[in-house]
Amino acid sequence: MVKIISWNVNGIRSVLRKELWYPFVNEHRPDIICLQEVRATPEQFTFSGDFQNEYPYRYYNNPQLKKGYSGTAILSKIEPMSIDRPNIDNEGRVITAEFEDYYLVCVYVPNAGSRFNYRVNEWDHSFREYLFGLDKKLIICGDFNVACQDIDIYNPNIRDTAGVTLEERFNFNQLLERFVDSFRLRNPELVKYTWWSNLGNCRSTNRGWRIDYFLVSKNVDFTEADILENVQGSDHCPIILIN
Image 1: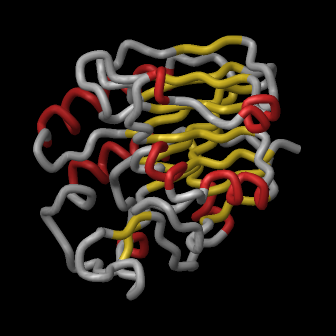
Image 2: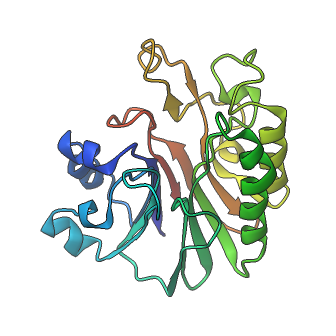
């Protein structure tokens, strides 16, 4: 059994400064942690000695052009067979760890707000082609920046806004032709969110969106898929998969 947690931390240094990181890890004891929007240079991507001893396998894909922006990481107690930082973009948005039975892909999909055409016509296509080219079972986790169904947004009447456009949902549903939305499979009608705007007390009033996912190959067995909505420290909350 392997417990994997995925979290868009909206800046790992901020979470560390708030002294929320180590209590969170100590409570949930994941085997593997996938992070998005790390927003740190490799030199700034550091942890306490005890944590580094517990998670000796730490890999970071940082943006090559813009410091303090984007970035994905995998922290693991289990040594992977290989690590891939695919050349999908130069923003450090994808990192993949290969294990014996599966690939674990950590992704931070670009927001479509200011780069809509790039996102739906280029980036989504490149990412999909990358996934389809991998030759083992897949566990794909991260911030996909799209609310797949109306149940995944507090106000389903919102339309023509980044994250709910027809084009974004169409592209995401192309992934669902091959992969399973683990949380929704286990919880067909449960309303839980993973992101809340920092404006207007959205989190305290639970006006959220579910835009973070664990997608898994249809032949991947898992026992739990959940959303840890009470964890603070970011505008996103962590999600968990136990397989």
